[in-house]
Length: 436
Image: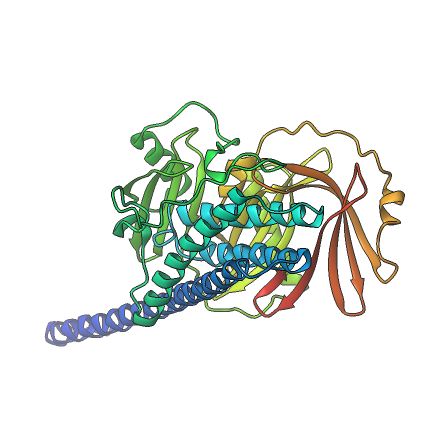
């Protein structure tokens, strides 16, 4: 038997402890470096979203100013189309901001209302009607508001002091008449008779929960995290907000006051992969996202488009009813590329719009609707879809996914009148599918 002397053992123990401490120190700093790298990516994405928002606001301001010089129906309709497109682009940039820096609904309402108003006026001009003095005045108010927004975000991008609306009073001024929260109330006849801020969430129960119950619900969803309260957010959908920041990264969670439902959460990806996935990986990512949605009560949903970010793929899903795609009822699911774990969800549109629709049968047959398509298009896929024309109006359409040469289009034909309601071009990029 080999005996180890006490003297050797006693001198060896400190060495072992020092080696262990050194290993732990290396692991600690590696974790810190990984967290720092992930934070740099998040910061870069946030800055990119702010700059995209600033650019679109500046372009939107220019387009609104052009209306003062436009006089012909052709130029007016083209400018209104640009305003609709730029409003949607700015809204997309705003939706990419982290929840801690996204606005409380005011800016998103402004962008949505501006786009809807421009579309309604474009339809008016195309039908041969002139703009009224009230409508011209409303457009002037919109330009004033947009000018203030563009100036603020342009300055923020130049000096790096990106605004965080809920905290700095960006939308909270009560006495300053120049504060850009004083958006014009756009009241007009036609299909969009209610402005966005007057709409109520349709996908929430009436019963409410308090903060303690909301925290219990959030903790049950994330049993391996210790969540602390971040207070209550007063918005179109009131939420209780919670967060955690530990060795697993940052996590923020929002639970609705009405119904105690999960509205939003966002965690930290484990890797940095951002190249488009191949078919096998896409199938795994969609499988993980679909399973999560079904497990958490969202029911059957139709996958739509995807975007790729550092370590994460964002998959868009729309609710289904009797085989009809409900495009207003959207959910964004964020899936970790390395682990296929769901690390984020944004159900704002779903909670706002989802309810049982009274769906009528199409008057036009699918074959008749196909005959309205351009002969230059090659049809790839057909579906029935309920598409939003505003926050208060939806239209039942045939969705035709088509190609022309190497270009991919989606055409929505009204299932009652046969009119072409929308035409989108789908652009494939390294970041995912872009619909324009």
